[in-house]
Length: 257
Image 1 (cartoon, rainbow, N blue to C red):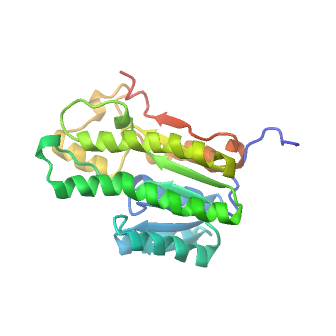
Image 2 (cartoon, one colour; image 1 turned 90 degrees about the vertical axis):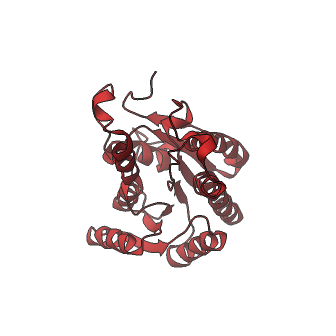
């Protein structure tokens, strides 16, 4: 087998990607980056007007985007989004499981409704979506790339609220590892990014509740979503064909305690 020197490319032409949670924050950026590199991208989230705005932005830059309203806790909606994406753009070869919500409460103070919502959004939906797309890739005998978005909260918790968020993100890490083993022989690579504190609506809400984080960070700053571009592109690019089951922390040194 011959490899170029260096064996690295961000060209995603011919790929179809689905990104969850694209109405703001990291998902908004992920969708733009994938489209800019040539992938056709399905944009999903609950706020239709935000999806339409992002789709217009991507198209203005010469990219292909399909805005699809999605409630990740609605199983029928999940299946319909996958089907419509493939009907429009062809087989889904890239999945970015980005949608997630915090709980911001101590474990004993959470209602069962909130417990179900956090578990459903942060863990159940990514699992169901991954399995559905994997089935389709295997049936079509196509390789695929899945990138799960966890958090440094998967590895530590200070006890001041958001215990379930930490638990679900730790589960996403383990899901990545387990599915990577099961699906490796089908050339479906499953990897994970564990970001620290990056600019997003979720982060804005957390800072509104507890105060600004930046002064307490090692570099006294909150990360910008653009600083995740290179990691995302590496995990979906041809160069990472031998990488599966990896969990990459991108936290600006914030989580090294």
